[in-house]
Image (cartoon, rainbow, N blue to C red; front, side):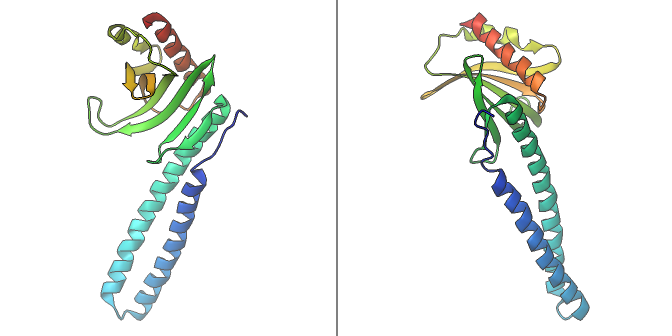
Length: 189
């Protein structure tokens, strides 16, 4: 494979393991306080911690499965995989002599509130001359709900960003999106 790394996934796996260890400790405390029934406040506190820990474990397992799906997709694409500082899975790599980054997000707020998104970035080494007024004309691709395509200019970073509704883990669908953004770039430069 082309440099696929599982950076950050081992930390997530360890968090789940530690949560299970904490769950066992809380359970032992619950059993002890229930059997001996000496301190009702301790029992209530331990019961609350138990519920919180179970909810945390369910959320952590859900995130682990999600990250695992992202990792498997990056392996299929031959992209590098990593988790950023916020724990968001990202992949970057080359496809048809272009540099791409993919990441997934659940966005709260803004124009398209509360929707899962797949972000596809076509990155450039230097600032490109892009006709940004034409980008909205290319927000349709059969089988996909493309929210928008924009040209982003940040200090030292230049890229076309395509936001697509839903998490997309199918290699062929991702390849269609990559090809689409390459065509868009060819038409608007």
